[in-house]
Length: 133
Image (cartoon, rainbow, N blue to C red; front, side):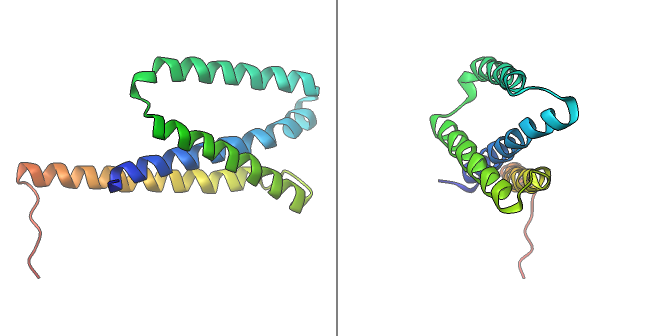
């Protein structure tokens, strides 16, 4: 498995973990701030899920089965992590920070992958010269 593929999988993992953590934060937030009932939040999450299914079907030709597995693992880890943070802190106030940190890790993985791709492209075109130290 090459570095670009690994970085893409890590990006998917961290993205799904951060999304899942934010969803565990969403229900108490919507209740506290907007006064939504549990069933209303459930319908909202159902709507988000349906939108996600439609989006993944549109891009189904682009999704690798390995990436989809990583997405599910990220969702599970994020839900578990969100539950652990909520139970240990007694609150969901840290969830946005935890999710943001995971999103930053995903962006870092994407940056590494992009930089390696650009470097490889420049090498292939002969426009990249490494100094011989």
